[in-house]
Image (cartoon, rainbow, N blue to C red; front, top):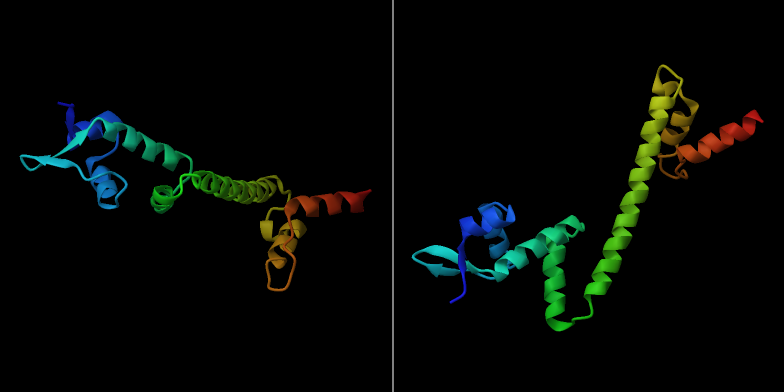
Length: 150
């Protein structure tokens, strides 16, 4: 007979709270556990399933995306690559957004103006956010300022 784990044992072995395991079970991300004496009992395969869910979350997949992937895989086993390509595109977009945010914040720290609102670069970026304007990027403004000084 295979070893069966209580929800507490599965929680301890994976570091995932029992409430999360129950939630994943309700969402269909984990198969329903067998019941013995009113307690959930999981096979050792549940360890791998929980670890896989954790890995998917680390890779940036939401639980909704994991559900979608599992639904798709039930009918087409080749679709997982499409999901991964889409996630990589999302990550690249997020990286670009974060790099821009970092540049803005670094400029704010390095700016020699006492009041950030008096900085012409900052003013140009703020004004560029108004409807009908092309968004300015600090890097572009710095390059233009350097060209004017030459």
